[in-house]
Image (cartoon, rainbow, N blue to C red; front, side, top):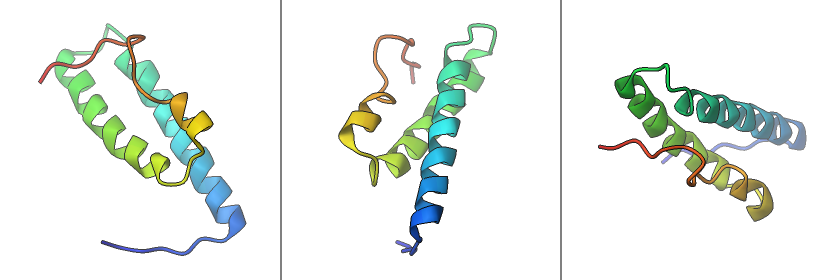
Length: 76
């Protein structure tokens, strides 16, 4: 396990970057033009980035990115 120290400005920037990445991946997972294999890879990456964001995001913000029925779950 690695630890990192960030100042307030860096924390805000990391928050912004992770939120934007989650937004993009949600859009991509909802794009039916993409191959199922690609959408599966995006879903796996989404889980990782979501867990990173969940470590410091308030629950209200976190609920915006929790996957639900809006997008079909990728089958394993």
